[in-house]
Length: 117
Image 1 (cartoon, one colour):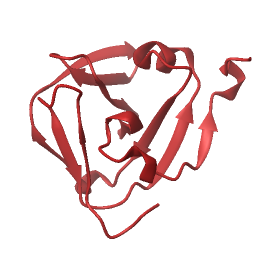
Image 2: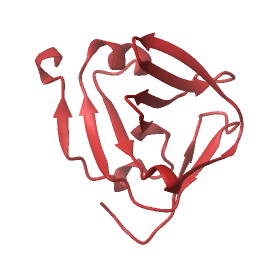
Image 3: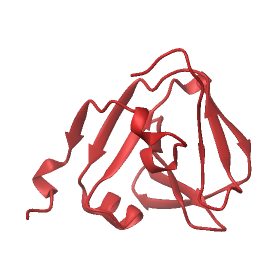
């Protein structure tokens, strides 16, 4: 991961914004069906920042409990998917980052559900 920089992001309409003062600890592309549905894409990139480094600086998140113990947060105005939370861990969607190309991914998860083609 790139270090020594501030990471910023938010939703499509700009109502919700966040920043992280440290680099992501971990990043993965998820191929499960729920992540496809929430993103409208064949897979979704998620990044985990250190808990104390992530700060919501603007807006109010809406939430959806997609399955037992899983909360997905999004912008109630434009619908942008922003988080996946499970087992006390918060992941930010890669696409919501201002510079998503700076993330170095560690792995792919739920590849048995990967779309073929």
